[in-house]
Length: 331
Ligand SMILES: Cc1cc2nc3c(=O)[nH]c(=O)nc-3n(C[C@H](O)[C@H](O)[C@H](O)COP(=O)(O)OP(=O)(O)OC[C@H]3O[C@@H](n4cnc5c(N)ncnc54)[C@H](O)[C@@H]3O)c2cc1C
Image 1 (cartoon, rainbow, N blue to C red):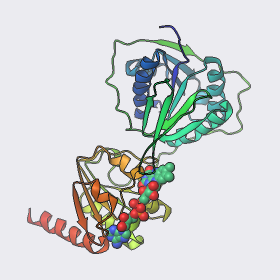
Image 2 (image 1 turned 90 degrees about the vertical axis):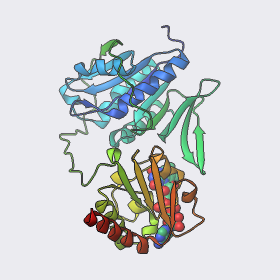
Image 3 (image 1 turned 180 degrees about the horizontal axis):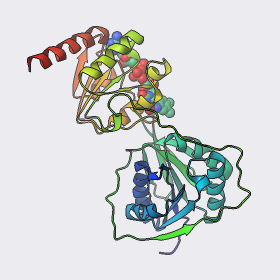
Image 4 (image 1 turned 120 degrees about the horizontal axis):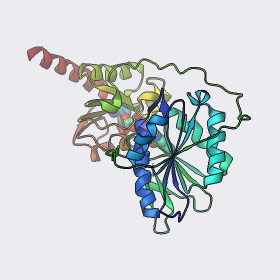
């Protein structure tokens, strides 16, 4: 294939030598974009002893993997990673650069974008090419989806959360080229990550939970929030939240569902005291059955769910908990 425009890039992420699912999902989508543009998919993978992972990238849709393989790259190093990616991007001139909206990606993407003096759209929920082959970077806004474009500067950069795009079916017949990166001696080393300590996850993980209970501002206070948490516990559900619950300090950011949080696809979703803003609802777009509890019969959340309960959650939730416990005892 001849290069007609710059390649579509994915900055892959690894933790402890394991390539993250979001990186493979981005490679799969990069493949679709590159096919439309008539160009290559190139992946940048930085880590230690990662050579064996290149085939995983090819099977997901990559044509070429730039591999930075060295002990000092084992952990994400902000300055070092930025420098390597920026210098390579200046040389290869990618048309598009996709980065996972992970803790690392959220820091790395703006560092790279600033150095390349280009635009960046955070937390995209879709990426399509318009008729001029410009990337429409879609984010929820004003009750719908807004397309952000970067028509002049290159690369067109976006961060995307895990679960926005499907994980591609691996095609083990695909192969590609591995380009080993030479690391110059004068790379910046002022900041060094020495160790990554993984926290213990409490309760059921949101991404794989069959039942999700999500609470919002309508909880009112910590006591109201605890009722919602109790409901999640009796249902053996994962507990999620909206932005105000994080802002109030009732819930951790890692439990926020939506555009800038987690993507979930439960069999049952119960939204308690939340209004159904698109920035939250994009995170549960694939839920099979959706229920909302809200004291405002006109709340927009009721237009988006299968079952609506109009009530004060502080009165309804304790009754629901008691009923679930009663039902469990009878069984
Ligand atoms: C760029 C951007 C990204 C964002 N990303 C996210 C994201 O990833 N996730 C996210 O959640 N938000 C996100 N937001 C914020 C989002 O726009 C909304 O502000 C947020 O989702 C609203 O949360 P809420 O529904 O809990 O609060 P509100 O909109 O204030 O709704 C509270 C609801 O509770 C109901 N209520 C009040 N009291 C009771 C009661 N006693 N019983 C029952 N119901 C009651 C009210 O009727 C109301 O409908 C983002 C915003 C921006 C601009």
